Image (cartoon, rainbow, N blue to C red; front, top):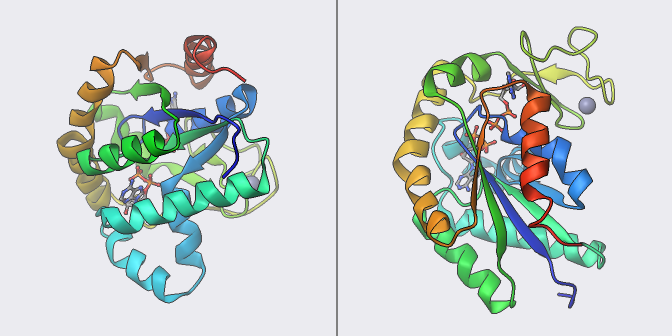
Length: 228
Ligand code: ADP
Ligand code: ADP
Ligand code: ZN
């Protein structure tokens, strides 16, 4: 661990709100490293290991991976990032924390290191929009960039604009798994937002607008909160 203070910003919202899309747009501009627990698990799934078999049992059902395993994977990743980049100024957490136990684990891990959360950005979209967004979502197999068949199509069908990689549909973007994941969000994740609201660090952004409009609103709201 280095002495460099790290800004922790969280981006939260229901599945399909546009967290991944927005994180990719704003993180580089704010000097933050985008860390998405879902991406960490997808990398583990690809690795064809025992850990991958364990994660798959939860992932494909749209269930949460157990907290202890999730926390271990996340903090191991952040420590590895910091070792590789001693100049790291901040992390944009996407997909974590998702329940009260994870929020507490994050608070205590940061307190131990003399660090704190700078801001929590809630990107919100009405539930009836989310299914359309998720069942049309396409992801690049090589760089993870996110597209939508209708709302944000790639320039040439099936190929990533950024790197030419092949686009695929996530195994858990089926209507059944989406319903289950949204249910977990409203039951377990949304309630933890009060904790951040009380601390005065919750920023609410209307995600039901054009992608670029949402990006501008997030950048504007974070400008003063993220120092580097
Ligand atoms: P999340 O990470 O919150 O689950 P994504 O960023 O993966 O959400 O976005 C979900 C889907 O919705 C993707 O297919 C994405 O291209 C599309 N999308 C994201 N933001 C918008 C928006 N503002 N308007 C329309 N579609 C969007
Ligand atoms: P989504 O938010 O659209 O469900 P993610 O890409 O964030 O998708 O996560 C995909 C899957 O990875 C989740 O359904 C869950 O199985 C696992 N996962 C991601 N983040 C967490 C977390 N914080 N705690 C437990 N499981 C997680
Ligand atoms: Zn790509």
